[in-house]
Length: 123
Image 1 (cartoon, rainbow, N blue to C red):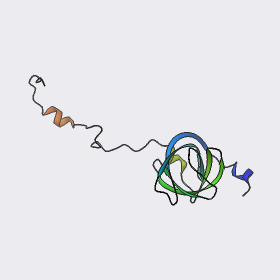
Image 2: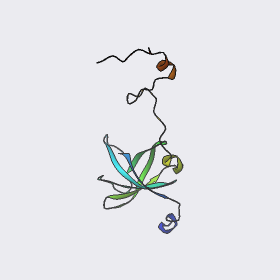
Image 3: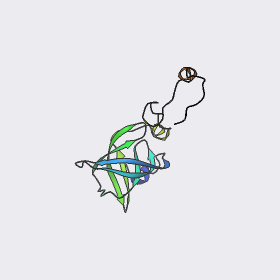
Image 4: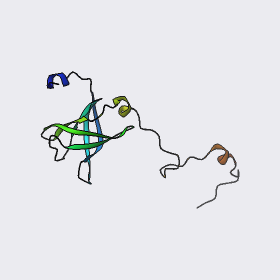
């Protein structure tokens, strides 16, 4: 497929930080996802990206997606996914965390109602 044909694929502009892992490296890189389509994405970041490298990208609500570097221009590069994804999933709000994730604890209404009605104690 010619480069001009690739430009006709629908893509959405975004500005989302994602994790990127390069084949053969243990390190995770945080890069900016600039746009996303079913077949790939454009990213920007301080990564030694070379055309043809196999990479994995952790996309919100999708998980790790395998792809390869299709092009590089300064700090921006394109990633062609091995298999198509549903880009709407990556744009959707992230699934909520469990109530006991350590950040916020919700008490059921029954537990609040069971508290004594007496005065508050000083601490």
